[in-house]
Length: 275
Ligand code: NAD
Image (cartoon, rainbow, N blue to C red; front, top):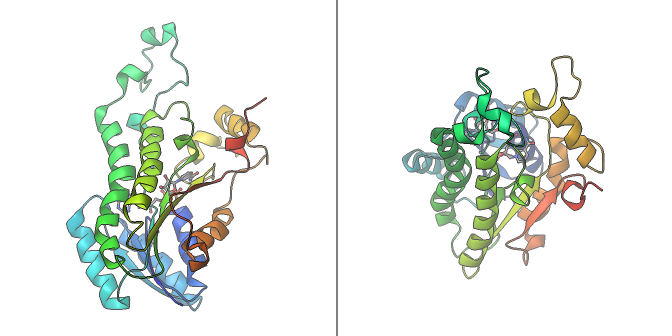
């Protein structure tokens, strides 16, 4: 049966692919993003391919904006059945320059060089808010439509760094660990009212957010890019399409007894000790 599915951050790389894939099953897709033009472009493409979609402006950090978005979606399609919390990301002000702190770092005066001691609370706050609060607030708004109805679920997007933190990005790692933890909390909290809550934890996908960190201007891998591929047994980055079947499964009624899990989609990264 067609469902109404809201995807936040769906103007972006991963969730635009998920939106397009879910639309092929006849679902009503609400493509929500801070960047309305990106949301509209994704919705237009879905419609051009015969699907049902609407582009919606929305800020996952502002409840009023989400309430307005919900009204628009309810007017277009009725009640929301599925929420995919895709908006998220890191901030350079919450990122250290080096993976390991060394004594000589204290004397490094290079412009832009950042040790742990230089991390800006604004960068940490931005990252925690976008990933954690940006998952919690849309859930508060859209899950109201789901309470007590059959076939409703929420899917969060966690990350590899939630299992074991990645070097250099303490805020993003901590915030995604909070997303995984919240997924379990919410699954238990909503277990009596028919809302399943799960998450996916993508490994490494080469996207606009991390391209500069992982590839040089000539397309070759940076040392960090080489390290990631070396640590991924399947020896490649993920493609957005690699997420699709797991997302379809977790959102489908066939997964009706599955709640509170975080599924790695990572080419073996989280299973590999490196030895
Ligand atoms: P992306 O930057 O391409 O997409 C993120 C989208 O979120 C953008 O379209 C942006 O406009 C939107 N957004 C930002 N702030 C917003 C706000 N306040 N309100 C509404 N929308 C907002 O990122 P992506 O690579 O597609 O990542 C999608 C999700 O997957 C994120 O949660 C990310 O943390 C997670 N993830 C990505 C990777 C990866 O390798 N790319 C790996 C693991 C997890």
